[in-house]
Image (cartoon, rainbow, N blue to C red; front, top):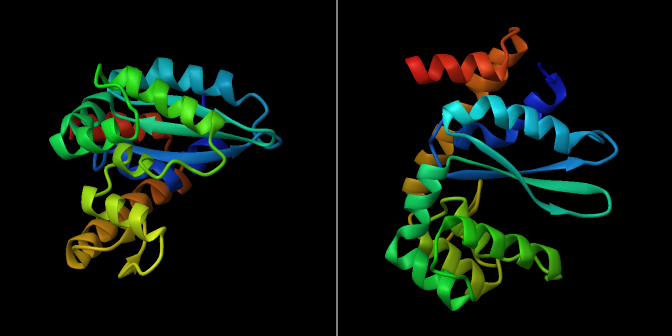
Length: 190
């Protein structure tokens, strides 16, 4: 089982989460281009669970599906950080665990007109940058990359470079004829 178009999108947008550099990534899929997305994700999920990778539709709109690609262990650790928990509680999230917090995020995505900015906490963004983004409404950042950086620019640049290298490695390996399952198997045994 391989869907090259799906794997290309996942490698491009989710390489850091797939390879464990961050707890989660988001990717949006067109319903027109991927009409069978739910079935595809279920098939990949069945295979990739052995790598500790989950694929979950967190929002389904008229034309697109928003998918969270995450590693439960990494995400759980991220969400258990004291500063992260404090911000999530402030935004009305339960403290009862990752699954309930994901369900709350899904409900916020379904009903909120604007994108819930605390989603950056799920994606592993620095707490200081998430807070600054919320208070400054996305303006006046010092650097814009995988997220808007307000605090530690040098650390963010290094992180962005690692993410870029990770993305390039996966997309190049796909172009060379490998599947993501093969690459994840190799990464797990390396």
